[in-house]
Image (cartoon, rainbow, N blue to C red; front, side, top):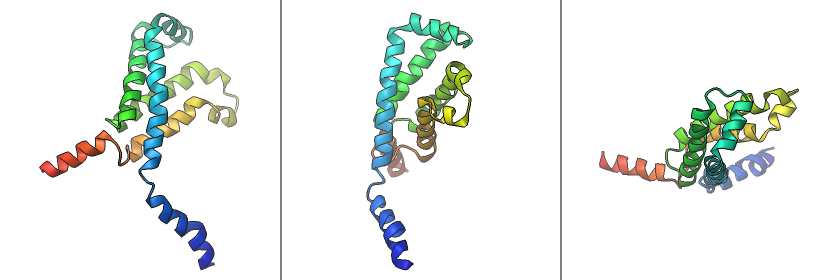
Length: 151
């Protein structure tokens, strides 16, 4: 039993310790890239996106459309850089909750359907980043190390 535990639990854990930097970097890069371009698309097509927001019943679409587009664009950029990661991930997570509620709510007929939405997958990644942080390869880490060295 000890051999099985060593091979199936201890060895993978030891290997993963060497790659702890990779998961948050990859997650930040993927969702940062997606939302940078999603936000840019919204910013460059504000009238069309505003009409969609209005159709979905989002209040004050003339105000919230550029706000959401800006959060997606700036939040995506910041995630790529690892800058203000927890705040960016939190803000983008709120955008995903609103997106599911406003645009997809009528499609939900089961937990299976809900968990199949891309927005819920993004929400899971944003929740993880907001709690776990940006990882070792991020501007946030550089700023934190610089703050500690000055103390």
